[in-house]
Length: 177
Image (cartoon, rainbow, N blue to C red; front, top):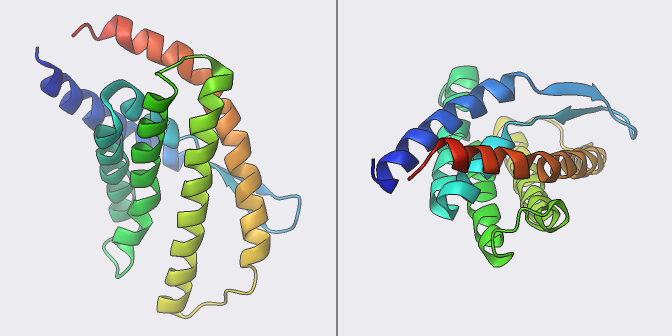
């Protein structure tokens, strides 16, 4: 099987798993009021970006997030905006993974996971703001939400950096291209 076929199959599977994992997200009370959502769906995008490259990671994030949005909310005026964070995660992680020479050292992996999570948090917060303006709901609590989202992003980044090495080693062992 050629590399392109493997990438299409793997990224399709990872996009589907993204949707499933997003439904298993945990929402909990946050330390600064409100709630905090911990979702591990982003690991699917990171696996795609690490194994197949930044463009494939971005495509996986785009397709996974789009499917999740369509299933949950249908198509709205802001649907495409809600897909951008996952798309950026794949692209940015993939580029940074190449920059760290594809190291599977958890401390080295913390760099691209933290940076890509920070970008996801920033873009997602901007999308929340735009969505609030389009659909006219209050935006006063965004400061509190941002603090909670930063904490959630840091927690998820550490988990991703720790679980990614064995997952990628297993992926390379299972998929011989």
